[in-house]
Length: 636
Image (cartoon, rainbow, N blue to C red; front, top):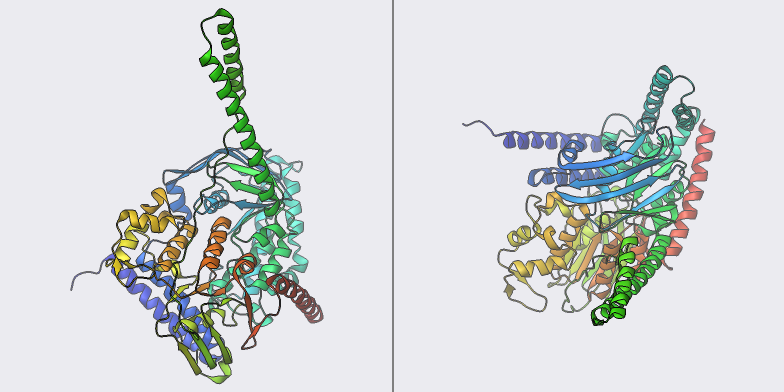
């Protein structure tokens, strides 16, 4: 028997680890440490992660990023300043200019929202700052939230408190080093003393508990080992760590992705009071409007344009600025055209020649002073789901459906559900994390079977199902065109037709172009793409399934604002049904006609709109936080 290859050894090791984790989960269920559905969720997450590592390269590590990126930039703010100003700033990744000879100014006490299209380089920019690949003074501590807390025997509370104690030691050591090198008059010491005061060790435990509670942890979960938590809950632990440390520069990349609506509202309110420098990317307009004081727009030319105000103010200001800029550009071009026409029509008479020379000097002065550039048009694209034939209702119906992963009555997530979904449905499913929203979609599609009751589906019914692991099906070492060609070797069935159509390269380009995958991105290996661009490829794939009903589980996590608007337009133009699970209030307001609240094993229709539901959640969260603080105060 020959030696195993490195890949085979790696796969065998992964299989052993997965089997061991399954045994550990089974033991925890038996001891009552976790429930059956928590074990199933953890097992599914581990399986998806294993499948993804088998089929494609993972996201770039810091070392991989630095190996493929070229960065220039210099510090233009004072070394002892609280502000961070970077000049002549450029980032080139895989030979493509993301940021080109621009400046970035982050001032203390301001909260910045970073806006840009998918693939423009927002996440790369945050990672470059976190790695200090441009000059940032050492007294400025940076926290980049980009991965969950590591699974360990430590509880959530211990993990959160531990980073603050570690940060205190780092600041104490830095204070000592500066004192020895520059003396007690060093200006950097003032910043360090303020950071040490903000750690407030005396109130560490109650503040850690408040953060965890705000992000959805119960008292029991706060004292559960992180190794028993899913990745989503460990991400909340990491977010709590960042908020408790309260770093000088906090970098957040889509912080709401693992949160339910209630936790999103709490985080909005908390970050709106962040005292230092916050630099955040988010697809949520509500979040940015509540949290940010400034907006940084990474435009198509790779320039960082700064605006005062939140997202809505940015949109208004930019629109007015572009309108005025275009008017000025058109006026200048019309003046130049008129003057040149005069010059070309002048004869050889000396007085006319002198006038022509005078007019040419006017143009020369305009050029020397600098002509107004024509505003760059933002790339536009239009998502589209194909028309589908009507099916006689009921398309899907639940009758007395109860469900639990274990099959036991005491573990039921749902009891006695009775409802139907058809091609006129436009439903948003909301509720706390862990109540079974994603499970409901799996029951609809038939991935899970009810423990009691029955689910009937029309015999010709087709679903398109998007979930948070849908990108795992992509083969990232292929380009989008290569992947589609491989996925549909026998061609695709167009809407309203029963025969297959074999698409050529031009056909695939058109199909991908509808979802914003254009130009060289259609032939670029997908492992170099941002998460948002990969999501667009998945939507192009889902559209080819010609669905009657769309089942979308958090579809906006990696999409930019324009892309979300295009998705909303496509859903509204779609003549089939929709069941949506999302924490994006704006998308829900755009596409949902009905809101179903999942809680206490039941589904209850909400009688008003999503705005009123948000107000309800905010009031409920404030009441719960007051009660929790009283309990912690009584306990202490």
